[in-house]
Length: 243
Image (spheres, rainbow, N blue to C red):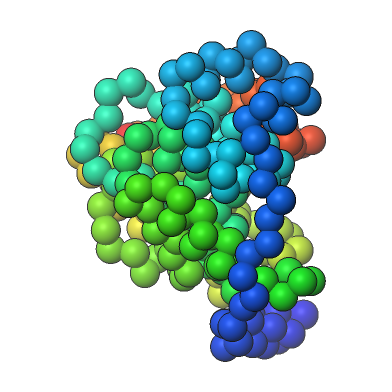
């Protein structure tokens, strides 16, 4: 399994050609018509500019980015230093609208397995790059977060790999299971006064995350279970704010 994952990952990275992204975009009105949390959606839409979302987001993008916007609106400190935002493990950029809108600043979205290909021939990378172009001063970066050297005022990290099982489920080589090394690198990328939001899946992973944060001496605040009326996820999630 390990050798196959390594071979498959290297093959994906070597064949970077991709068909363009194919999307069926959905308007705000369409989303609102099927939304079960209209009051919260209307509240967010009056305080944030969602106009670009209707031009570039399909239903899955809306679901994931509304979840991100709702969570960040409630949990991020109201006063943040100047600087860019970063999303670690950005997949195909579906959460980028939520991050860019909530933080109102330029954003980077980094994805390790950016060359993973969908059945119709497009890769995550072309979706992420297209989404990044839709928002001012945003970039989609294909690569390992440990190669980034920039500094950030806000970092989001949804479901970092802490155990072998999820890494294996995504078909990624075991050499990328380096939670302490990655956490150290990411926290070192925070500007003074910057903040990192980490969200783990399940209490067991949250417990592991606590151990890693404590081992690095990170100043972290446990947020407990993260709830949102826009959550598209079935399993419970738990959060941390790292300063």
